Length: 615
Ligand code: AGP
Image 1 (cartoon, rainbow, N blue to C red):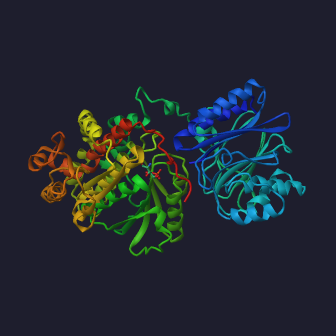
Image 2: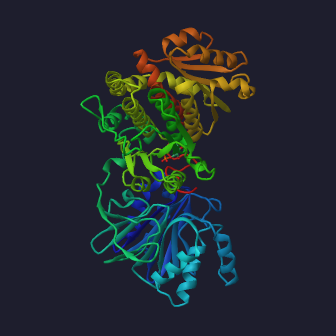
Image 3: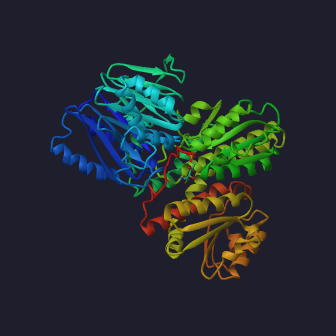
């Protein structure tokens, strides 16, 4: 999603902004731009595509001394919402070459504002919603307002979710910033200040960060930052000291971040478990804070992969703790007037902690009177800051757009919630609870064994790389994995893929089966495997190419499969209960290798963003 960086009061501000934009690249974008002020004039450079294109243009202009000695600059990576990917639609957007604005989010009432501005003679050069911002600033500055006053009038005009930064040649060395639902951080320097979509984008410049709260706006000068809340009352916001995340931009010898993130799971997942299990078997999750003083049902909301983690969580919590769980897509939740009967709390799941759909679901649940909890990976993110209680994934920054290690860490936490609830509400004895903790402690070595199957998965990837469509099937705990396997494959390889509950095939999707369509099933023998094998057989009989990734017992039964990958033998309870965690690994590896075979941009697939900050 769009990323914003601004630097005020440092020489070579443009170069420093570019460094910041590089750190936001992983979020996904399709054009970029930068504006600085030189000799009293705005200088803007923009380009479609990757930052390298922009850097090339910037280097040329530096040689031509256009950007020499600038000490103010703002930059942007754009993920197109309104208006296609083009030079004109890239940010910064300007008005009369005196005001420049970069913006993340959507100005929902832009059409009406645009009409008014056109009638006043403002000339629109882009198709974006954002362009109303510089023109509105221009309009109010022409009326005699300073940058702060003009910004406030703009805020009164606009509706939507946004974070933006504006600068004007008429007010040198000042930036107006504002946020509403989209994240924005201000960094404090010596005789310099910085703005970024997240703290990491400016941690090469400072470790002192202020997160603006929703509805805040601020006037940032070289030596002074004045912050105001949504009622325009002056406020002070906490300064947080962050640590520069040095490891973030290294791939550690791997070709892609995704590959690194898949392979580091045996090392990072113990960080998740050890922060919730003490003395090998005491789970430290605070169930009272989680809303379980008494036995209630639970609502889980999330998007994409985090939503699929939520479905696995539902299965575990219902199976282990006998507590009813509803899982909802965050983007649907607040628009469908949900019943909260029997519920006391909501649990949202979000790697980034910034998904706007999930944030909005959380806020809505708050309005309904529910306690709010989150599983998040990014500490200090908006969701983390807004919930009553956060459970941290602790797996370190995830850069590849495809969630891998964050998914498995979410599953680990959900499993521990289920076990903890099971003990509290007497579905599990102390011994049974301890046994389950032992199982989860065995996970890292089991995942390492699953990773050893990479070469066999590569062969399957080579075989299916030219398929038009791929079907994933699963039953029980592996049904959500079928959904996740399909999402992973489609998002990075661009092959159409769908996941189905295996038993549902005959109710419609089986019509999709034709000769050689790959049908992939992850399976473990858990007592119910025969049903799944029958479903697979039904696809085989209609010409599908059957790919089975399973334990020996299942493979021996499904003799008709065209490709099989036999996983290592694990203890029965471990393998059946933790099967979604085990099978995440081949699902991730398969998507990764198909994408690599097809030469797609694995870490930044087309059209996608790591932090989805629009609804
Ligand atoms: C996963 O591979 C996707 N990139 C995507 O579905 C993601 O899980 C979703 O956008 C939710 O993100 P979040 O966990 O950061 O909220």
